[in-house]
Length: 304
Length: 273
Image (cartoon, rainbow over all chains, first blue to last red):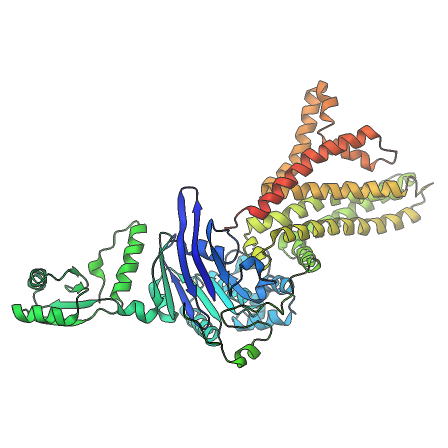
């Protein structure tokens, strides 16, 4: 279990992490989601004891990271797959970690096999590795101490579709055995597929958190009419706030029955009327991303 | 937060040594990493990279060539143990501080510090292990250089092959090597950049030498700051005077102790990105 309690970190005038609290529970995969620069990596560095927070406490299984003896045996960390010595072989990278943790070399071979790096690939220097191979090496490095907690920053980056599929299975099995998995991503879909719980972060603060079901459920209603302009006017008259969403449709916080009644009373023909599953989360995420991105994203492009 | 029920014992059995998999980390069976193991890891890091392997092979080759060249082309009476050792010591004196610099700086340059300090959050222990590893390499290098020097001296036919060999002289030669390595480590830690630290390590003594050459009046003052000059007396077979030790001490304070303190602070406190 990973616990963040009111953690804040400032760099000069820039607040990277602002009063962040959340829990990544054991036996579950927690997705840590947010656009680039939202504070994910800073939070993960704080978890791994690499960055000291200005305020708040981060603990793993009730302990501060620095108080865990031989932490590699308990917490597997992958913060940046590219942060490896270019002149070392892949095998040597794992060998150094195994040595530090006091593990026999047999763990190295076992891990190379687990992440699908061949003996020939393991003998090559990291300089000649593709990002996908580095990512596999980084995952092997995180797993080699047989930890019960995994902290992975953007582990899917650079993996091919088969690699992503493999990683999902691996993390699911890890959580199913009771382990804690926290993985970050800037892609909603990537997290949605694998996570049991989600934590959304934007500009250093938590925007939403909960189980995936909860987050996907509280999305309001999607409605589309034969005559969108007329529906818009009718809902307006009925005092129901609605915003454009998808192909000529509207999204609203009101219950479907309220919209159906208003439409029936005005004689508006509805084409679609259903709970807007996921759209709320996706819109929230797009807004988060858009406010930090250079491009402006029009929410009308989001389908229900 | 919701309490999570404990997981079946089988999952623990599946992953022996991982501690409990519930909400509280069971670290009771985990021993902290001993310093000796960290030193072994750091010694391995000095030679397992491409640059480390090349540097070590190159130094070995140059040491052999220089010593052999001196033995073959030098005067027979010059083939004393100390002369042969100082020949082999030239490449070692260049390379060992550079290895020390690389051992510290590559963690930042190659960003491996991210992994190193995650596996060992107590950075002071990592730094201590690096210093110990670099010093062990230095001592090992001298011992390895001393063996062929002793053999060559005994068969070289010099009038007195063991001329000037006393415990004090040998200790001073060792001290000179150790000083060079510690100097390199201090610069490396203070600058945390391989290229900068290596350039600074070789440039500082040269600059002081140039200043001394141009500004002849400063000679007396400069000897308090010129560590390269003041440490060279350690190789002399004569006795070292009190004022020479004093010059050495101020030089060490300025060029080794001050950067070492800054460097230790930076290594322990600076953020790894």
